[in-house]
Image (cartoon, rainbow, N blue to C red; front, side):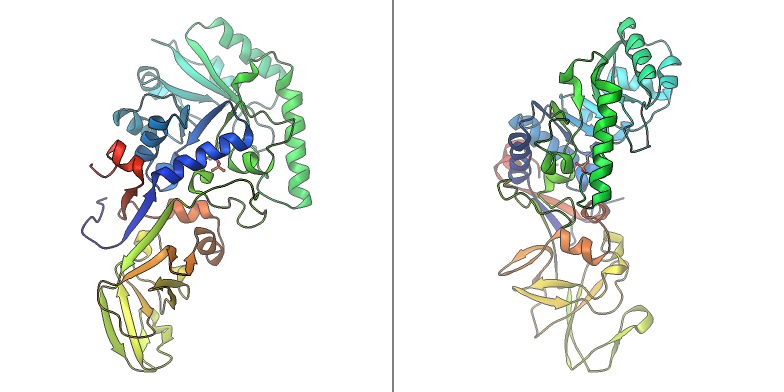
Length: 386
Ligand SMILES: *Cc1c(COP(=O)(O)O)cnc(C)c1O
């Protein structure tokens, strides 16, 4: 996979805004520690650059990623904060975890009981399954056994005891009830086991935003991910609190690569699914579904000189056509996500149009789109130098 550095389709990422958002959520939750979740290349924004900005400003106390390779990428980039890998892992790469000071997740008692002998200290996070039914302990006796094993093995160091909520981003009665059940389950499973409460980690973005005053939730170490982008992580289901001041972090732009006159009735693109409604100008832009601008975005719009213009015809792999209101010069900027004049297309709007969540929109934006970093922190850490 190469990044198309010569192609005028790009994403701008403001590292100051991302850092601000992390600091803001720390204040909002009164968290002691912030573990910045940077899986999926930092939700498409660039994990290394975000991590450097967060380490530089001490906005994060650790990084959380989804696999060992993401963790190693951060270590190779010189990041020194703890890095925690989520998910269940077999034993084959334990040495890499130990050697690189990377925290591994313990998914079950079985995993812990069959752990091979270690050549150094292994940091571990104990997953508690309170209702996600994905990984983790769901039995109090087994948690007690795990605690004994950890305490008697000098090579094991407990990094966190954590759980993950399934419905903290949703306002429905069913979701609230399920959240309550998970909170109760946590009390039953964990609270009387004698763990150091400083190790508890319970809040992702939505739990941090909308459950920040719930006394059953520990904010000792929060794990926000999607919120770093400053978007509404409930997809509009819950309003963002007015006093939580988040900033927009990224925008996606392209340029008009070709502009041509097209007669009324002329069909455009594969399938000839749409025709020109009137005589006028059509521009072709250098992005398509291989950039993550999926075919379901047909009929949505981009902003050109402060005005919305409709995408016409099917989105192709690398090129997309837009109907113009007049002739514009080649090289004119088109905004796919972001603000231009009075118009704004948010990631939330794109998600809504695509019948999905912002996380999917962001993580689908392809690595071949070049990322350009802005803000003072981009200068300080040399984000655009590599
Ligand atoms: C992805 C993930 C997070 C971060 O979730 P957001 O909703 O993006 O804040 C936190 N914890 C776990 C276990 C996760 O899988």
